[in-house]
Amino acid sequence: MIIACIQPKIHQSIKKCYSEIEYLLKMLIDQVAKIDIICLPERWVPLLNDISQNIQKERGENYSFIKTIAGEYQINIISGAIWEKRKNSRKPTITSYFINEKGEEVGRQDKIHLYSYEKGQFEPGNELNLFSFNEYFFAILICFDMAFFETPRLAAENGADVLFSPTQIREEGMYNWKIYLQARALENRIPIIACNSVGSFNKRRFLGNSKIISFVKNFISPSKLKIVEGPKDSGYIFDDIDLKFPKKIRKIRFNEKIEKNNIKINVINK
Image (cartoon, rainbow, N blue to C red; front, side, top):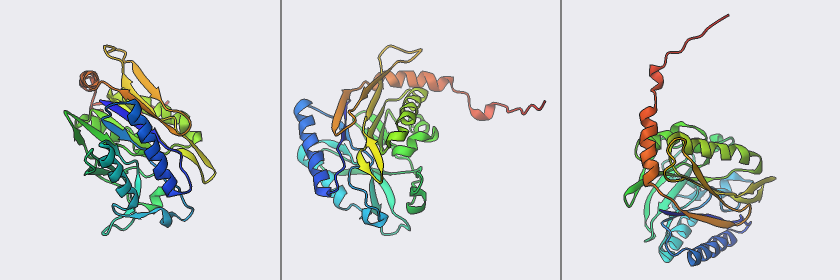
């Protein structure tokens, strides 16, 4: 599967953000003949101080832009994260759409683990979706969903072959983020595609450096990671990743797992 991450710089104008995504998409398509799926970062539009001004109606302007370019360039796109208010919801939702090469919505994944200020502003998701693509399945884990072992493990145990993670990791969190991604890939023996935001807002810097993490074939024990990293600026990365070999070593790893309920806990006092 040929995977790509596009990490556009966030401008103050939404139209400029749209233009940069399309510019990078054209460059990428010119360089790579056939791309299966492109992933965008969690945030790729400006963040205004008034949170309410950042929230769109369900399937609003940002959603329509992604649908349009997916159909026009005949490419499957994971939309990053869109803040939207649904008719019957109490609070807005952070969600990521999967749009196919015909410009059709296949489905969406809501952010399950809300981070920091998001807890008071948004409604968390409570369902984890698996998307079929050709002979494989993938899950979308938005940013903080990758920081907990349960969500990636649930996806892998239920048939996901690859995990996509649109993220918004600021400069101070980059070191931890890299460890999280490698740990999740290794403990589940599953490739991970993490696309990070680029730009500065609210006195915070976002450095991109997106990652495509896969496995070097025939390295079973220990497994060997292959990591392609993006620039610390506007740009993109891509890689042709093997999904059959990780499936083999994932089966081995899960057969080695011991159910936590079968492990007795003893508290020993001096």
